[in-house]
Length: 428
Image 1 (tube, rainbow, N blue to C red):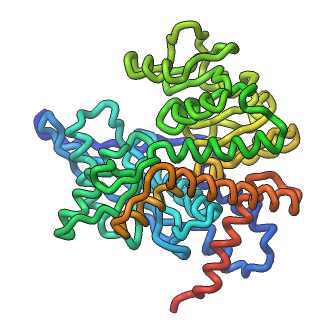
Image 2 (image 1 turned 60 degrees about the vertical axis):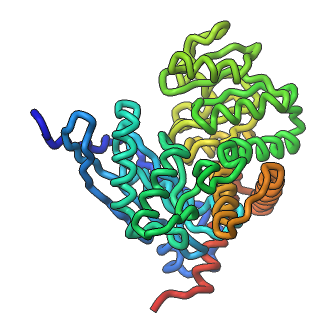
Image 3 (image 1 turned 180 degrees about the vertical axis):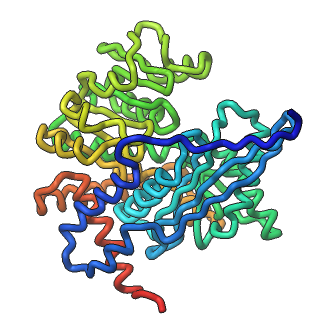
């Protein structure tokens, strides 16, 4: 039927929701911050704003399809809201709220002057043409433009979005202002005000924290084995960076499955294979494993770089890694954290491990506002300083309070946001 309106509906998730997990993590850390009034902590437990938009997009066929999108701002008390945009069929408001909350703690734990936000559209861009994705991006940008801006809320790439997506975002927003506003988004192409080092920043920040953790544990990375779940931007770059450190990459996976070889393989060759075939599966000299099986393989370092809720109460006791470096957001349930702590597995929590992306996004924003750009050596040097300082601050709290690393990271970040809230006061 021509011009039929089709509605993309959110998927229903079972079990503990991502936002429920985020609030439980908050509650566990809040117990160690009794100095703040209950009302202040109640404010920090929920988002400041939740925007839902339903909008039409004309598809290549001429049909009009309806899409639902979200933008959630959890906190703006320490500065503009900051957070990525994901295009995925499984996007829900609950998930976006959780991701926005985690972003608020992530920016605080590394000490950059941002709040936390997140956005998403329920769609499957893998089933859409590039022109359909562009039209969807531009319409979604127009719909949420009432709350985004270089001084209010600054989007960035996330799942299934990239530098090109951010170029469309920036252009659409700029058409509304009448002049170019490069600082409205980060993760842009270099030709439009992007920063060198941004594409690798999430993985590089994870690399820096894994190095720090390995040093604490007396683990020589040049002799370590690494498994990476998720071979998107963060996962494949993390694998390549750790391989450059001398580590042996023994397993990687994507949405179609995983590969394993205990003797290791070249992650660059695997990436080329994925580009040629659409998946890492079938790479020469490897055995096929599932994403679930990959998490339980023997390795020194496990890097979950896929989606939320991968390490749970049901598989935590079978994880054999010494270090878990969370390149993904929310991959570990609280019950799994307790198991890892008891087993002596060193977890680098997501709000610390993958904060390199938002840190270099901050660098990009600063450079855009100043119209003054740094070289990649300067960017990476500043990033390493930020990540190492944040790592040491988190571990010091963990040792002082005798808590696991995630609770320590939350104590640090929530304390910073709560203190800023108290200093600003409640208006009016």
